[in-house]
Image (cartoon, rainbow, N blue to C red; front, side, top):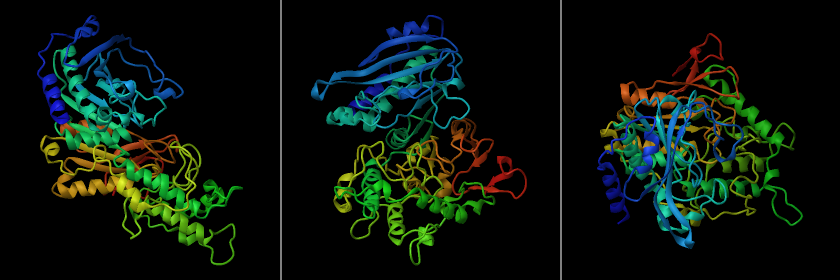
Length: 514
């Protein structure tokens, strides 16, 4: 019934007759009169060129100056739900005066629950989508956050859970397209989606369950199986370190002291020594992670422990943590993680080998984990984005680009890569799928950004050229604060950036995708 209701709503929105709004000095205010089933327009604002606003979720600084645009804010299906809490799918749509004719939906993050400024910043180095002339929409996916970015208390309400899982984005997209057509007196030529983390999962969901809504989708570091990824980072890895950690006065393991700073330094140096220069230059980046077969056992002490080796039990704990959770019979339930330069990071978002309490709460103090039982409970079929049949999306001309940070400590890049390979196998094989989908490993990058990486790249421009001009990207240029003055090509699998052998090693022009 929910599915039928969703389809009916989308159809009703698409069939609404135009109200005759055209872009003019009064048309933004006039959108207060927009009518659609279940839709309330709460506010319309003509935003002047050069206006700035605080960055999302209270981050320091302000966004870049905005172009002149009409912002429409509203809510779909406002209602009272479980616990007498108000629910409804809130949205914000920004329509620039200098419109390029296209529409972009930006994905959410964490548990959503906040309508972020509609800018379109994911994989859009240089200028967010709004600044490029896209009409951009954002949504809270149907609930309000009461306790920060990872508040999932809304899940007690079934409809709120369904909206977050997969329904809200398609409904907001349909409505946004209708308002855009009203405002500009013509529909958007092309529609795009870009998101990372939860937004990456949302992009995958849209390609799998609503395959004709978007012409192009960018999915970064997707939270595609959070039940299993939480088992890996919240139970399996902490327990591996608890088993070797020193105990506090109450006999509980102190996980943060299982691997010391000097241990991490040894590990990082050995990893760099073995895998860094495979791309032709030693530069603190591992460009071909799948070819890096590093094993921490090379650091195992052969006799008494010294500062230049790791105790065998530490080596075993690192191997176990990095290998990913397995059942008692040895069956892999979630992939392991890549050995990359960011896994030993102890500042910012800590790497996998810098254990301790994180944003999800204090680390567990258990020394055993029942993977068999936890894995059985980890599947979330409404939320998980695992369907591989994208034949309709592909036949409709859709283009789908994945990227994932090699040092992501929350979601394994090998899980996303595994999905990509499975999806390719289910849709005609790698060569056929390469005509409409690509996967990019991002060396050193943590979760969606940061880390010892070049985390600024423009996949949005690459995607629009692919969709609108038929020009598939061969690479995109990546830069980042971690390496000032450096650039590299970000290459689609199965290629990686390789130094040509001559020229400035800081210049992407002297590298090729090989």
